[in-house]
Every structure is written in structure tokens, then in C-alpha cells.
Image 1 (cartoon, one colour):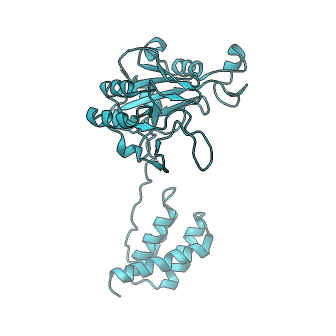
Image 2 (cartoon, rainbow, N blue to C red):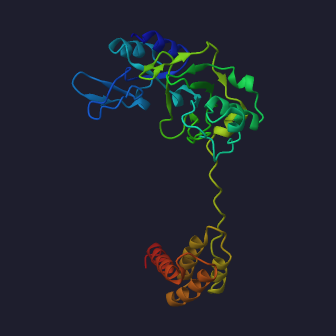
Image 3 (spheres, rainbow, N blue to C red):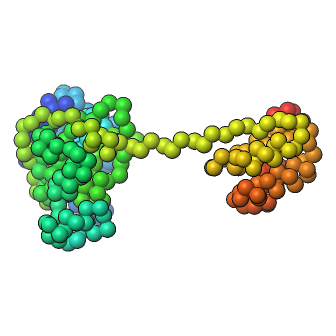
Length: 305
């Protein structure tokens, strides 16, 4: 089977692609079928390509690679292609949605619910337009699942988490390399990947972008450095009033300030340690003593003492 025409078409669609093993390829060591993996086998030994680096939309390079290995499957790298691909899997087990927010679909659709039906429920839940969501380039997978392709906005990081585990996955730019899918024309031991239409890849709807984007990290708690009052009382107050999640930082900085103010370390351990215990610090007084001593050592190094 010569897949070079499919590879060329993928490049013309703007996709960055790389070669994957041809249909039925088995790992010489384990015997497992590896026709979806980004490997190519030489007659002598297998080797694994760095698909995140090899993915290209250079037509000359693609023709060169598929001329050398015309039966290679077509891996579409989502990150450099600017794609979000939703992978709607077929139902694998009866009652698979039990324990999820879509468990009620079993009541209306029966024990076997596939990913495309779940995607419709997700779309309705978020106020999306179902017809609009389907009006994009789609590929039927070898296992009779469905890939829906969307343009992903530049500069937005996507999550790697499944929308609904086991039935609805996403491939986009998450992680170091992003994800990949097999493109149209690919053939695996389970069947062929067939483009259902020639519709251009549409932009991901805003609600879908918000759903699939990487969550923003929680804001770091504000931390006020200890007030240097010339005495221990203000530093004790700093520990007692430390914001949630910053108690250990407050204790360390209070210890440094106490050292800088010339407060005896035993006094600092006693009073700052008591404040740390009162504030329910993890590890109790023993941890407080260790932190105060560490703060003193740090400040003494800074001051060259």
C-alpha cells in the first residue's frame, strides 16, 4: 500500500506529519502490534524516531520519507500543526459512564455509549452548537471511532486530561511535545482511517477552548516579610498572622530578621517556635527549631559572619 498521496494531502492541509509503523508491524522483542507508534523498522533492527522533532510540513522532506517507506502510517503532530483533535472512542464496556456526570446517558442510550454521543452531551452542557461543532474536518478511525479536528488558538496551552475518561480524549499542545493522531489513509490492524469529508478545519469554539485549556495555576499566597521592630514581638506576630500556605516562609524570614536584629537564637527558637505551634505549623516545635536554625545560618552567611 502506497500512502504517499495521503501524506502529501496532509501537508497541503497544513499539518505537520511524521512516519509511523505500517499496518501489522510487530515489535521483535515483545511481539506486540506497534502499527500506531512512531517507529520504523529497518530489516536489521528497530529504531525509534523523535517524532516531536521529525514532524514536518516540508513537502520535499515528506516525499523523501514516504518514497523510502511508502506504507508508513501518517502521524499528525497536533502541537506544530496548531490543532486540537477530539478523539471520540467507541464504547468498550457496558455501563462505562457510571460514576461520571454523564451516567444518565445509559438510561436513554443503553449500556453502550460511544464518545460522539458523550461529546453531544458535553456540547449541550456548555451551551455549544452541535451542528457547528460537527462542521469541521473529521476522520473515522480504524476502530470505528471518530476524530474531529479544530484549529487551536496560538499561545493558549491545552490540558492533557481526557474530557471523559475512556471515551473522550483530546490531543493538542499539552506537555513538552503535544499529542498526535494517525491521519487519514493510515491503516492499522484494526482498520483504515478514512476522511469523512473534505471540510476545512474550523476554529475551536470558544467554549471548547475554555473547556480544554490548561487550568491556571492557583495564585501564590501573599507574603509580607517580617517587620523589623528591634524586638521579637513583631516577628512573633508575623508568624502568627502568616497567610495560609506561607507559615513556613514566615517563620524562616522571621528567623533571618531576628538574626539580623541580634536576637539570641535560643530566644528566637523559644518564641518563634511557640508562635509556629500556635499557628498549627506542620511538624510542630521540632520543625520550628530546625527552620529557625536554618534561617540563622542563612542570614549569617549573607552577612559574612
